[in-house]
Length: 280
Ligand SMILES: C[S@@+](CC[C@H](N)C(=O)[O-])C[C@H]1O[C@@H](n2cnc3c(N)ncnc32)[C@H](O)[C@@H]1O
Picture 1 (spheres, rainbow, N blue to C red):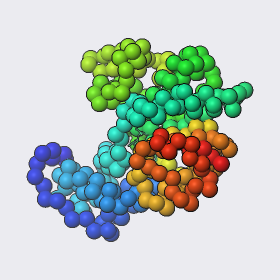
Picture 2 (cartoon, rainbow, N blue to C red):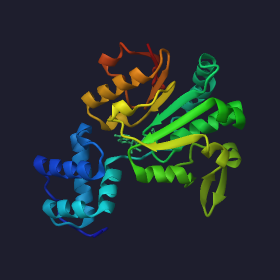
Picture 3 (cartoon, rainbow, N blue to C red):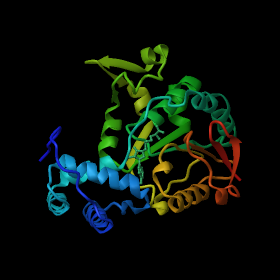
Picture 4 (cartoon, rainbow, N blue to C red):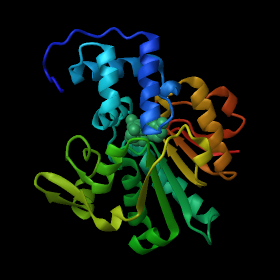
């Protein structure tokens, strides 16, 4: 059904048709509607999928979507954007290693420190954190005193995360030569993360919109994921994150994300440049 590179007329997509596609996707996958996402973004991606499927009109695409589980997975994947890198925004990871993690470790002495990477993509972010922990505390302490949970809506990207096999460019661009040497081995031109780091991270499929499912955590990284949601959904998610963090628990947002005004009563800004917030 794929017609890569072939010229297919751009399908017109009315609001009703877009809704029909999203409702069908939600019914068949069990995932909630993507209606909390920014509409222009969703529409553009659905139109692109219709074109790539080779369907001539929206009705044909709806039938195809109903019949083909593979297309449903491809649509979920293209509705969720996976751009990520190891140590994306390197100064943030330096601040986590030198300031945030040591302070949290002191505060949670006597029990494991719980870290949650929300919208973890193919594991680049939680594995970067796991590397920091091994460097700072050693493999054994990192395994005993820290729990890293990494969640994403997209099963396909989570399967890549479990494999922990990456291309050098651009995914490993932020990994120094010393770290690459210590934590990765080359495999047919790609790089495999070492088991000692890999085993520190647990992956789970989870939709950020289902706030009742949120785990307790001391440090939450929710970077470059909220930007795809509309403002009411962003606020609902941030309220729920405030509920599961303890007082002085830490939330990190992405560089292009900011704390909406109604949430400032619940989060104090610790580092405006790195977008680090503390639960009041
Ligand atoms: C741009 S990536 C960010 C990856 C990483 N946090 C970073 O900053 O490099 C956004 C991730 O959010 C995930 N995502 C999108 N909608 C989601 C949802 N409703 N629930 C959980 N994850 C979601 C996507 O699948 C994607 O992997």
